[in-house]
Image (cartoon, rainbow, N blue to C red; front, side, top):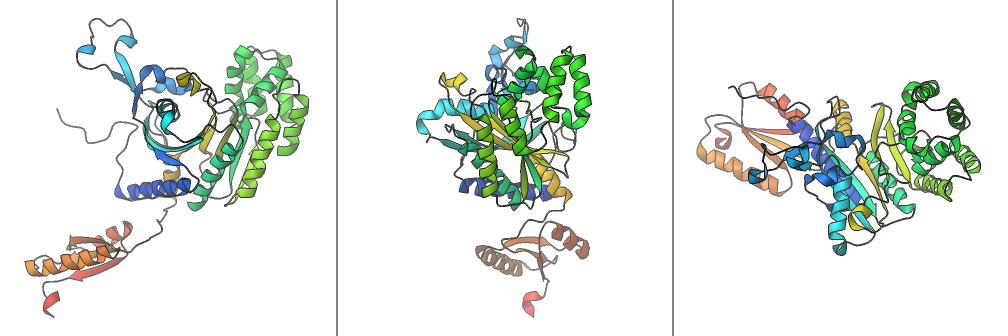
Length: 420
């Protein structure tokens, strides 16, 4: 049987050009987030299957790559259900593993704990541009801070990072799950049907108000509730006025200080921003993960026609591991989407050090090659990246290819170079 040279569908080989950009973005993340006080941590790529299936991952729980039991524990002939065969799975995100990590290591962590995670996750999803079955996620989370300062720090750090990558004029959309629930309650929707309402609302940008109304009707909701609900959105004409309107009309069903909390976040982010972007209140923002309990936010870029980062507050997840309530808030940046945009832009990595090539003519004597290697070592010790390679017959094409890899200087050595 012939071996297959292509990678598994939804996964990919990464060529040097892309790898350089990926490494650069990762190093910039470490540097930028580090300046905001986030500490780099690492969790295993494999998690207990009961954790992954704890009804906190939304639709992602349907996309888990599950791992069979091994050795004597795998009893195929005795298995009656999936649980008899599977005990682990590949992580589908970094949030749930971080919650387990915190619960296991809390006595060794400083509070509030600011964590930075970067690593591969896996989802059995339908592949498309910028979406893979294996991909890298980069998350920052603040655990143990109940104040809006956590949201401000997360949004400020991520927008600063995007600014350093030459992204600007993007939008940060912000909402609160408690506002979503209050609007649904005010409209008369049954509480056990809120998730259905929110799933339909999440399509607003694609199908509009009329489309949302139609789908709500088709889902069996009363027309009176639908009219009240959509009427709320029609009356929200701007950020601050919309928030105050909702605060007034939802006062009997909305928790105290939710609106003030959002306003404080928006004002602080505006004051602290280091690049050009707009932060707006968006009452249609839902975020799909069921573990969100409060503030939610996304960063949207026009050139990708979708979000490149998203997150929110999840104050109940860690408590399921510890038994104690621990407030938490996180932001995940779409690493693969960012890299895709940079590749499409032909992004050039800012050079800190010279990248130089020594081209050696074939047939040079060994003593002269020794001299070249000594010269290369001296330049490397000075901080120059030096590539020593044999000179090809088509030297022009060789230089063109190496230039694409970022090499800016070429020095040629011939059989008689050191005899001149």
